Image (cartoon, rainbow, N blue to C red; front, side, top):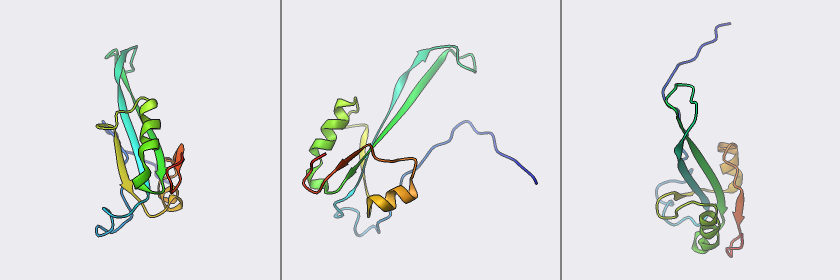
Length: 116
């Protein structure tokens, strides 16, 4: 059996909606994806550069995007900037989201009336 891999400088995840384009702007449920990179810290990095940054992600399931304020406030309290670091990805159901992205389990869930 052959085993192999490629060496790359960077790898990343892309999260995409499962909705057709005609529904993306009107569908009420989906995921708030909060992300940020912290400034590099002085450390003994493997490459001897002396700096390592940290990337953080947090996910919230939103049942009704009209009532999103409590989720945004919660993410802000966790240190995310709503104007630059939080995006909304419309998605059909939470179950479908988890089936597609099990590594992106929402830590917060907001009901149809906005209670988180």
